Image 1: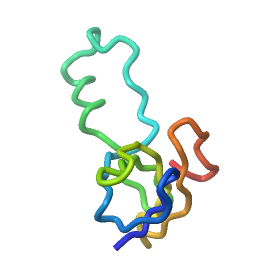
Image 2: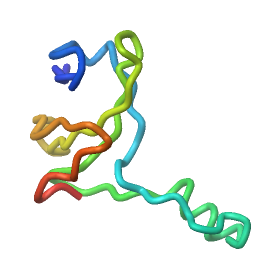
Image 3: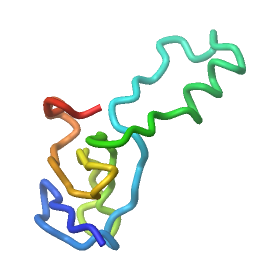
Length: 93
């Protein structure tokens, strides 16, 4: 089980959070102009690396705010936690 450190509430057990997928995925500039294949690519295809990976989490039973976590996908070690307004740490995909 993970111990995530909410930037607003402090350390809490993983059961208080919900995973929100890959972080730093830009929304398409003109979504109406995308083909079905391009829209499907945006919606469903994400990176799946071994090693550091930037993810979005929401503190669903606490402050209900979204934040980013850099987690090593091979060891589950949490490497960094930062607010959505903060820059992505070096080495995070």
